[in-house]
Amino acid sequence: MVLLAANAPYWDNPVFWVGVSFAILIAFALRQGVLGALTKALDDRADLIKTEIAEARRLREEAQALLEDSKRRHAGAEQEATAIVAGAKLEAEALATEARRQLKESVERRTRMAEEKIARAEAQAVAEVRSASVELAVAAAEQIISGKAPTMAGALIDQSIADLKGRLH
Image (cartoon, rainbow, N blue to C red; front, side, top):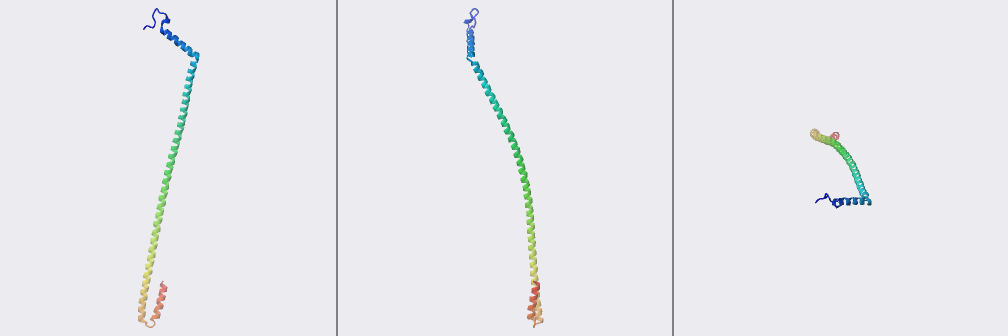
């Protein structure tokens, strides 16, 4: 198909009429304010995009602030945990020192009590030995005296025994 014949007039060409139709359409659109509406729609779209960008920027700054706050809190929590661990170590050392001191005191007290018990047992054994030796001495003296002095023996022996027991005890 040939768009333009060499001897045909230009109004017979369909390209010419498409161009004229397009020009009329543009003129009509300009006259009706379509261009203003189109410009307004594009401006509204640009404003919406600017608003979304501003909102995104605000959200980004807010997220950045939250991140900084989170980092600060994390650092504070780590410091607090370190302080708690150090305090727990000090407290454990103090408790261990106190337990050692109490154990030492307990051992010393039990040793002292055992030594006192041994000393009492020794004193009691010495007293029992003395008492037994006194009784043996009294019995021996009684035999000796009863053999030599049969007449006064009874009264003298009883008094000597009573006196001797009073002096030894």
